[in-house]
Amino acid sequence: STEKAPFFNTDSARVYIVKAEESFATLTPKEKKSYEELLVNDNSIQTQKNSVCSTGLRFALQQNGIDGLNHFITEFTFCTNMQQAISLRNERAFSAAKSENTSAAYKKFADTYLTAKEFQEANARYDERIFEETTQDRSIASYLQFIKDYPNNPYTVQADKVIYQLAIPNK
Image (tube, rainbow, N blue to C red):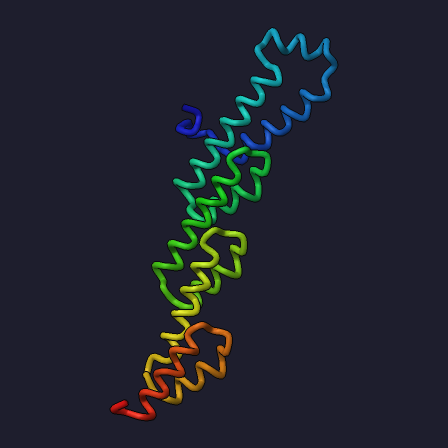
């Protein structure tokens, strides 16, 4: 297949198929008829365009991970598989954030991928991790600081309970 050819470049293929489509659209009916004899028509150009999109997405997935998918999303804007690329990119980015499992990783994901289906889960994990990271030493001071720094965090209720338990032992 074309993507296995050592000279195949998805970016060049993208540029040339867009040029072909644009140029073909400007031809007169008579000129289009002459190309028809060479099996070049709107359908064959669309077929090739779909092939370039599929190959570009496969290449992005195989070679470059999140960066490759971002490149595909930015440069292959005409592709019908764009939503698939966005979903795959978001899944990979969220998976990376989960592997790191820090508040910073979840915040970066949520700040970067506002429309991702994983957005709410990333925010929930951020809230949990920031609570765990801030109160790691389990001292009254760290729980008080957490409540002061993150008053809207859902874990402030838990912080209040822990403060009470630490302040009044044996209750």
